[in-house]
Image 1 (tube, helix red, strand yellow):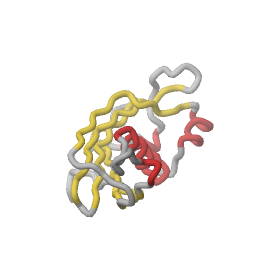
Image 2 (image 1 turned 90 degrees about the horizontal axis):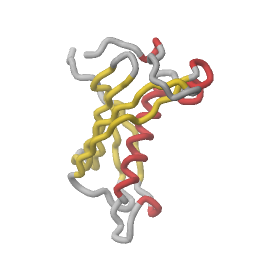
Image 3 (image 1 turned 60 degrees about the vertical axis):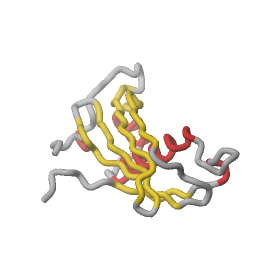
Amino acid sequence: MSDVPTPFHIGVRVYYEDTDATGVVYHANYLRYFERARTEWLEAQGLGHQSLADAYGIVFTLADLSIRFRRPARLDDRLSVSAAVAERTRARVVFEQEITRDGALLIQGQFTVACVKVADFRPCRLPEALIKESR
């Protein structure tokens, strides 16, 4: 068995609204695609943002990000967006993410999300359901 976690994937289609005047995805929209993949990853764990807020009084906030643009995505492209947990501590999760088209790497990103209390946005522990041994 590999020590590298299997990435979670979602499909995304590039719509006209996602592009600039040249038909290329506007750079800020890649952040939306990455966020969708992390949200769907969370749902696949049996949790959701609203259920975490309701049950535990917590939310996730983006604490840090790094993106490397390699190739553009264009109007009507079918993309695959991945999310893999690279590191997990008691109060944060670091995701390694990629956007590909037909297997070709377009964008790479690393995103750190912190667990915070809804009431005061102070850091707090991840729920037990999300605390697993890091590989």
